[in-house]
Length: 158
Ligand code: SME
Image (cartoon, rainbow, N blue to C red; front, side, top):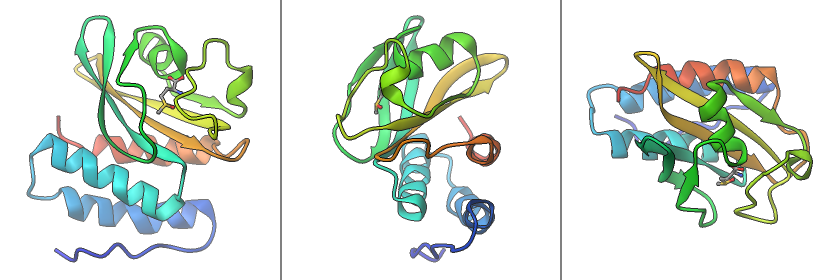
């Protein structure tokens, strides 16, 4: 497997279209979850240069635990229903937050974060993790990110 990511250019969709086969290549033949989540976070960070991107894992009935990520240090545990991540888990839906200061209960792991998207990862009808991306710019995420990030997480075996 090639170890260098080829960073795509063009529209956001074109960047995702170039990235997704490379992510699938990284995941093929490897079933270690930590390795795979680490590589997905690294590939997204390298392509989009977001402030923070990574995973929180459901490890108890009411709490998320920090998983593999790229970016500044982050809160280790998030209660169900708290912040954007805990709310995405509770509602079982993707949340796009154009301005984090306007999201009631947003958990500011970094003061540099301005906008955020959180995608729940659902297997057998239950949320087992969330993918979280934070940007240092307002309004960075839209339905294109939602579409492709929801596609990317289907490639990950849990
Ligand atoms: N902002 C998130 C917390 C996680 S950090 O952004 C990495 C939230 O409100 O759930």
